[in-house]
Image 1 (cartoon, rainbow, N blue to C red):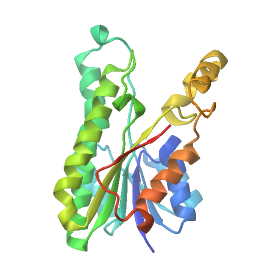
Image 2 (cartoon, rainbow, N blue to C red; image 1 turned 180 degrees about the vertical axis):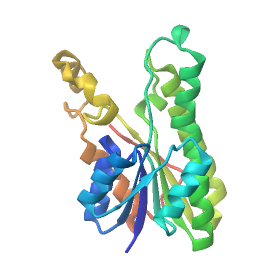
Image 3 (cartoon, rainbow, N blue to C red; image 1 turned 60 degrees about the horizontal axis):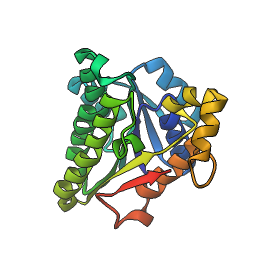
Length: 231
């Protein structure tokens, strides 16, 4: 049975990816900051609940030990959003966004890649955002971190390809799920964003999950170092 760990998997995009992976036959490690939330999802898909602060090394190491085996696939999905103009951003908020959205990608991927190297290979998918390509107002720290995820993922793919480890990034666009969902509760915002998309609709968590499962599969075995926009 193939194995996968998904961070931030207790809700939103992470939960949807975990559900899709379980249906595709993966043993899924549902990793989240709050164990009780991870347990609810893990029980519903037959997965393994894992508790960790993705920005804390000992915490992540312990979660991987609890999972008990090297994951074939890692999905770095955990993230937070702090909105507001850069002039008003506190240093504390800026650092926290960087820690959870960028530093954690390095930390969790490095832990996974060391195991994957010993196991003969693997696949890592890091979640970025359309804001990492085209920043928008009020999201300065978030956009900066997500742009860093794209560059970091390319670096990983260059260095770890020799160990048969593929690394790619997904940049979701206007997705009616996860952290973006509250914005689309406003019908005016929903209509404005939908009309800005050539397909004239918002994306779904399923759209992102299907892309992740494709990149994780053998069908994508010669795709590495890419940033795939789901928009």
